[in-house]
Image (cartoon, rainbow, N blue to C red):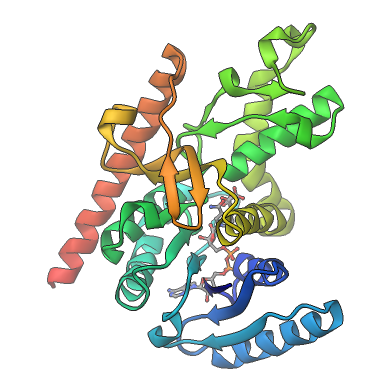
Length: 319
Ligand SMILES: NC(=O)C1=CN([C@@H]2O[C@H](COP(=O)(O)OP(=O)(O)OC[C@H]3O[C@@H](n4cnc5c(N)ncnc54)[C@H](O)[C@@H]3O)[C@@H](O)[C@H]2O)C=CC1
Ligand SMILES: O=C([O-])CC(=O)C(=O)O
């Protein structure tokens, strides 16, 4: 049984995730957490959800609060607080503003629930995951980010449409940044278990177009309806289910990498990882030369931006 806490529960992604995750049988308590001033909204949200659970026959207890003690006893904490981008912005434009928000909550989690698993969603997610790891002081396998799991699902949908097969027939991964430097792993892409290059007719696969579609998916949706909610929400819900039900699935999420395994270190970036009730454990993979070069570019961008942001945060905390 697990207590799941959503930080940023008043937001679009946070409230959808809270509702989606509460239906998992192992989730005993759903704690809706927000910043001071949002108590009335959280109260209303909690009551709305209780009505929903009664209608659905879900037995999850809903609690809410704005003080750090609410975090105590959490098994999984999802951090969704932060400013979302406008269609004209990149995720990287949010880095400093959201890092200030993430730092505050990460410190609270590190103090109140250091044994929990912390899943970071706030954008730019790779950088925010490193910020959360640094300022929470938690173990690296207990802090991870949504990363390119969502991008991998978006590519999966494109491939299922192209091949006209059920999505469950597609296995694929995108590693690296949740952003423009993301790296598709065509070498790990299969349809019905068959490696994509061994399928007849695959030469026609519009790989570049598909990746462009994945890269622009967030801004396309934001421009049309203001925010992405169901895609990230259900991608997050899958990760939480994997943890609470100890499914040992291998998904692609932002996690701290080590030099001995990935040739780089010091940042959180998406790679394949085994996800269990005990945490998230990256798995080393052999990349092609092109994938390796693209991955190095992604890591450099994340590292440079993270270092800049952390330098500002550290200077501010000296003031
Ligand atoms: N990694 C991913 O794939 C995705 C990441 N996101 C990111 O998640 C974050 C939230 O997105 P939405 O829920 O759509 O936004 P939203 O505006 O609906 O909600 C924002 C939440 O953050 C809180 N918040 C805002 N400023 C704050 C501050 N200064 N201090 C404390 N709390 C603050 C709000 O109270 C609210 O709960 C954004 O950074 C967005 O870019 C969203 C979708 C997918
Ligand atoms: O694009 C955004 O800002 C939200 C997000 O990360 C996504 O849906 O991929």
